[in-house]
Length: 252
Ligand SMILES: Nc1ncnc2c1ncn2[C@@H]1O[C@H](COP(=O)(O)OP(=O)(O)OP(=O)(O)O)[C@@H](O)[C@H]1O
Ligand SMILES: [Mg+2]
Image (cartoon, rainbow, N blue to C red):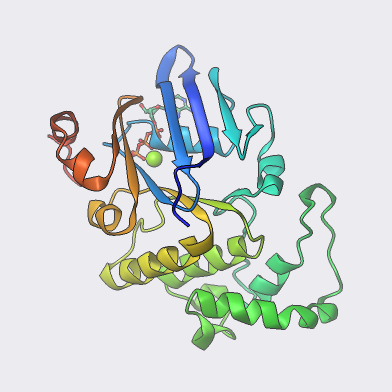
């Protein structure tokens, strides 16, 4: 359901750290049902924008709305409740629990995160069907009874995505989901993102431009805190300003 209806939009976002302007007058919108990438050279302000959108930082100026609600003044847990969830925000993975138990625990988090409580462990078995579904969705069925600490790095990230999906968010934000991964894991996580994006919106910060080209419907390029270019991967990668901004930066 790719649409041109924005689910998340930011207007005039500015973030100053003691006089240093890390993000300057950023206006962007993410359309419902799309996979949208935020890219740019090191230090461009990607993580800062990400933290502003998920409410981990409060903007110096600007406004953010999600599904028509002004969320500028809300806390991370409040926006999560509205369906805007970042991986890692609430999806702590417990290393000594099995994959299955991690997902069961995530599933029994009430939607109202402010009044979190824990059921006795034995009653978690009723959640097994849904847990196994989620584990299957992230291709971890064969590893359900291993502890999280026994998983490879890429599979740990898949487990984190499963525990985030347990909340059934309308929109998922991922900060460099492929960071530190080898080829095989990158392919697996890309497939996973494509699959989980079928009925939700994804915004991801990503350095790997092959992944972005392959996966994302739309790309916003930041450089020195400002938006340089916005459009399809083909459009932004042909933009001379983008090429110039990436020149001299190595690992991109
Ligand atoms: N808490 C902070 N205090 C002061 N300066 C900060 C703070 N957070 C970020 N910055 C600065 O803001 C700029 C943007 O940083 P940010 O981490 O958002 O960039 P990025 O695009 O995510 O970079 P990278 O690709 O390296 O992850 C950098 O110059 C950084 O040093
Ligand atoms: Mg960053």
